[in-house]
Amino acid sequence: MKKRVGVLISGTGSNMKALVAASHAADSNYEIACVASNKADAGGIAWAREQGIATKVISHRDYIQREAFDAQLNTYLKSQNLDAIACAGFMRIMTPVLIAPWQGKMLNIHPSLLPKYKGLHTHQRAIEAGDNEAGCTVHLVTLELDDGPILAQARVPVHADDTPDTLAARVLIEEHKLYPQALKDFLITRNLG
Image (cartoon, rainbow, N blue to C red; front, side, top):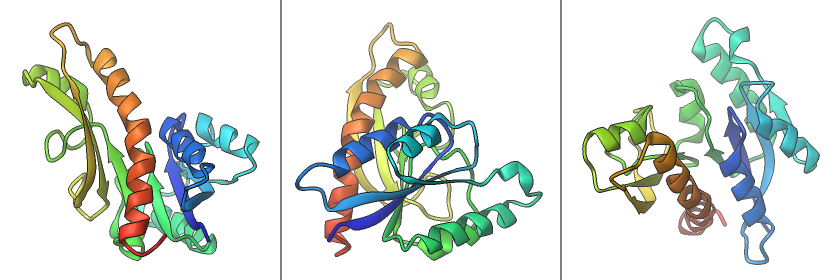
């Protein structure tokens, strides 16, 4: 029986699309049960709807406090009987109200080789630091931003003529391969799949 995974997005959802595509493989141990976003105009929401996946938009702008938004999102996620959550470009700093109920079951993909470059502008920071490699990390979500246990990483070289955009494009290709495999492996090792 495939495990039910919810995906959180804020934009186009390219990593969510990679997770959905991989979920259709014969050896997949998960299905994408729902996709939720904090933005009604997130391109990934319309795409998920077209695929027949349950979707939910809860605008963070409707809530003065982060905790109130997180509580509403958690209520929805709990209603979906999920085994795990995959954050895929969910551009929100989450509070314990959302993180605690999913402790050990919420994953995120981050566009750097953590612990380097937590937060935003990761590609620019890698180039400015003179790094010879960059990449992406799948990690468990904890109360500290981009600080949870690392589950998997993929590396790409940084070229002398790279811009943040060219580096981001190369890293994104690796993200689309890494995240589905990391999720599958995570569900197996945690006896969730």
